[in-house]
Image 1 (cartoon, rainbow over the protein chains, first blue to last red):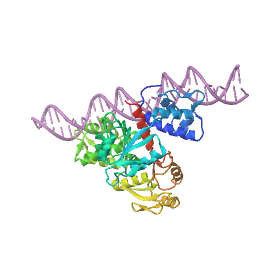
Image 2 (cartoon, chains in turn blue, green, brown, orange):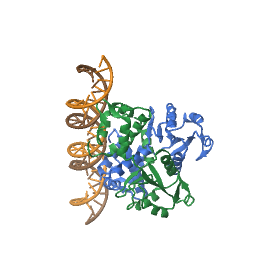
Image 3 (cartoon, each protein chain N blue to C red):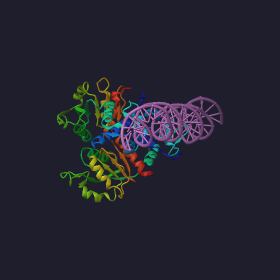
Length: 206
Length: 206
DNA sequence: ATAAATATGTCAATAAAATAACAATATCAT
DNA sequence: ATGATATTGTTATTTTATTGACATATTTAT
């Protein structure tokens, strides 16, 4: 039950949870760190060490209860509550993500949409009307927990200016730039970076 | 000019390149590791150490030539060549990525498309006809460097079986599962993992 | 031309992360 | 019930990654 949790650990939590969910769906009720490590291709030691940042969820001689541990991980990540989420940019990527969340991750409630393309404004996705930047700026003031930016970098940077002072606590940015907003956690996703890393590995086998 | 390059270093390369590109576009011709470090919020030491895995690209008292270093990084990552790329899954996410690559990253030549939805088969994106799984299986045999999987996990796992033995050298997988194909570098992108990590941070400020 | 300032590449030191070790405790088989 | 086996939580060790230090070379200013 250690205190400081490094980014490296945080990044592994969703993965643990994914595997536990899968095990649960397979009807498996208990798992040892050793077996889980084999499945996930990590050491048992790392699993135990990671989990013990948050508490002792296992039992000696038995292992971990799959369902219980999955639940604990969800608590830890805050997946046992709901989030009001809004999108800036309703192009293909935005729609893909909205679609996925609506269908698969009901804890995220889509409550606002914004796009600057005139033909989109006023139309609906998932029952929510797409607003212009001006109207959305008002909408942004209250009742949004997470802002997803699936718009070009220039727009992302513009929007970032208006985030401070709202209730927004997290930004998930897909624009090709790195946002940094004081008091707000931003995760900048650079899809092409991972493609470029793939190219590196292709050209440097082993 | 060290030899072994860790994943941590490889993951940073695309980011260095992004920033150098930006500097170049701003007309800046030289930069020191110190200044670049300030801009990128990393230590100068890390930049120098990372770059020196691949050679000494700088000059004492001067720094690095922006354009030259960007070029070197592109060489290192293999972005100075072209890749034949094919997509399994032509839904919104697939189209978003195809669209982006066609418009912004001309080194990737889209040469094949596949989807199992009957109404899509035979239609075109970016001048390429969408094939059924059966037809695509033949197409896959030769002339594809990178396979992008923007299809559900079940389909991703099916397709993964057919990759070995082809000329495919890399797989960029967005299906919600972790593929592992012998002899092929796979990058599994788990978008929701990063959203879940964001939730963790929202619920654990500081 | 010279001195001061700048900034690299690399080695050394430090910090962080991952792994291993193990005492403590529970389970399982008989 | 008892001993053998399994498996945790935690501390110790090892490995890896990051940062700092510095000798050396280049540039800039005078």
